[in-house]
Length: 121
Image (tube, rainbow, N blue to C red; front, top):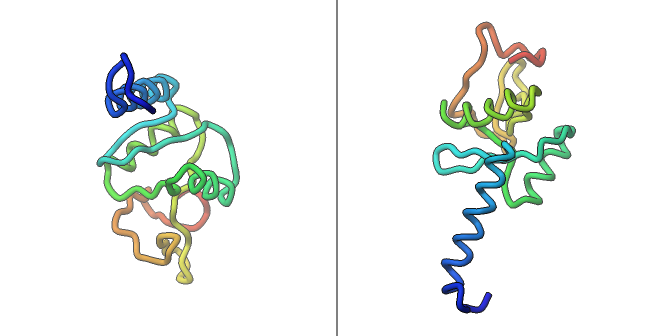
């Protein structure tokens, strides 16, 4: 963008980004926590499709690493009345989970007597 009578390009971009974020917030498509932006398109998809869409958007599938990030994901679950895929998978040890890259989880918030591997963790 070239500077013009509307101001310099940086301020113009900041203004446009702010407007776009406002629209996405109004439509319940983004929320923030811990300096991260959590987003959804509100559509149902399978796990692999979700991972791919996140990559296409320049991000990654959500993996909560704090209570605030967990709440950001829960925001969408409640608003859309659905479940959310997370960036974790069951490890080779039954009942244990890990990050998609194989690293240990640094934060968990399981229901009582979970994880059981039955989908209600």
